[in-house]
Each structure stands twice: as C-alpha cells, then as structure tokens.
Length: 207
Image (cartoon, rainbow, N blue to C red; front, side):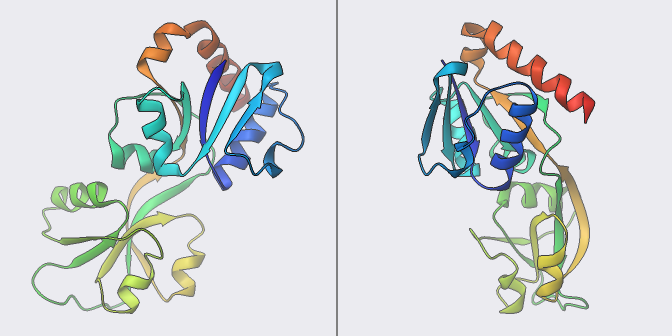
C-alpha cells in the first residue's frame, strides 16, 4: 500500500484528475467523501487529506510515502523530502502587493504574510530591511486596517487583490504543485513509486 498525502481544495481536485488520466481507478465519489483517510484497495493506495502546510510534515515523518504540495509550501518549509516531479497544476505566483501610492509608516516597512521565511529571504536579497508580521489568513486585510504596508501572498487571477483595492508590486516566484517523496519510502518502495512517477510524467508531457 502506497500512502499519498494531498491538500484539500483546488489542488486536490486537479491532482485527482491527473491521477485518473494516468489510469488510476479512483471511485467516482472520491471527491465527495468527507473522510480524511480514503483507501483505494484496487490500486493499493491510501490517501490522507490534510491542510497544504501539513502535507510536507506527513511526508517528512514517513506517515505518507508521497505527497502533493505547492512550491510555495516547499519554499517556506524547507523539509527533508525529495521533490521529484513538477505536476504543472494549480499554477499561480508569489507576489508583493500593497495599496497604490501607499505610504510607508516608520523606517522599516511592515510586511504581513503567511510565508515569513520566503518574505524575509526575498527582502534580504533586495537589500531592504522590513518587519515581518505572520498572519494565517485574510492577508489582504492587513494594509486596509493599517497593520502592514505590504503583503506577500499567493496570486492566482489577481481578483482578490483588485476587489480589496490592492495592486501587485513585485513578483517573487512562479508556483505549481509538486510530487514529493519520503527519502526512506523511496528506497523501500522504489518500484511502485517509480511507476507512479512514470505514469504521471506521461500525462503531464501530453498536457
């Protein structure tokens, strides 16, 4: 049995579609299930549904052999896992955004984000000193209520920024979802994992 950790939401839906295209027989009600652990015995697969940030933790600690995680999570977490395949799904990018003509309060601009490591590293590379404020959600709110001068967040269509009166200022990195593997699992279950990689690679190549 191969255990795969997957994030709920958009990435999950696109990943399920990819697995089906690769010939894996996932039941029709797979997406509707409220279960957090789903066994697909005919494919010898078990799926764990988790929050995006937790997928990498499950794979690193070996409770999942494989995982599907956004490159944003990989950049932020820096965990001991192998990133083995760009699945080219859930495309978006990490960006700096803020109010148009926003004034900076104080010496160091305050930057709100749920990616403190990525943001710190980016501004350090730019030679800019900033104060990082860690938030877990509704990042766009921070400049509107005066908590921060800028934000670092995922941008897909840009609609959320626009609806909240914010503009994209700088692009940090392109993001897609990646297939990741636990290093020990890769040694112990290499044949099965290599088969999954090969089947997915063929589908991605045809996209």
